[in-house]
Image (cartoon, rainbow, N blue to C red; front, side, top):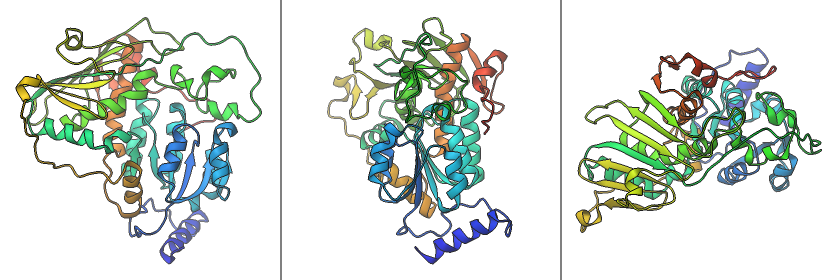
Length: 429
């Protein structure tokens, strides 16, 4: 271990003991790129396993998971890492040893884990959407900026070549000024009534910790390991699952930030479960040199009229930019200028956006050197807020007039309970 890292730990330990003032400064102020980070991973199964693999080049000093079944492979692979169920206990006991955290828990505990760590000055990688509510996202974004932390949202496709080339096409004017974007996801994530059965909690699951800040309810296997997305108390449906991935392309290419209005349609809202389908319409104001943009999201099998009329290929999931001179259709790995005859022989613009180091590697380097990340919590916070607002509009059944400064729907005070849900007693941000 380097002398620099040892000195930094000494300062933190002395501060914790009251000998020095606590300074929320970034680790990036002088750490060598050759030094390894001491990383804690909160949530080790599912996406957590993939994120753990993404940071495996560093020192994995702690692993935390409420479900020993899900965590077993990670726990066995890293026998020297300290093991925990409660991230609060982990950070309280060995927080001085940790440089950065990876949060891969269900949506409803993203903010609780990330904010606790970031308040201690830990850099943070968090799965998408950034949090479960708009308020939580804003707290995370503001805290990351205040403490000058290296952050990254788990929108891994952002690092791939196809998105970069699609962004260059739009920004080079290949299809002219864009005033309309359609984004569709072919899947669905429908919930329903709460189960009436109350089976025993498995011995290797801490159900109370899994619930975290969500309202208490009896355990049932229908909630986990992955189906929690179908329940409002824990997840955000198909929109929350894939909205940050696909709408990221529109946000990046068009420089979008906060919508002015949001309205939604779908089946009658269910108090417990997310919808089988929804269509969300966002209106963005004009930006410097660019017209207003209407962005529409579709899931559960719904498609834009241009697809239904056969004017655009019916890809399973895609992003369609409609410009004054043509259209661009893209998904994770493909892109196509339309109409095809019009763009025959088209020469793409010069490559301007450099290749990514890799989504996780980009964040690791930022933790060490202060270099930028492309999906930091400022950019990804606005993206996540935008996604979550679609669910708020759907659940209240009204067109929202959005005030991003005050986090209010000016015309709809009943939206407040969805913008900032109450935490269960014992849980705070």
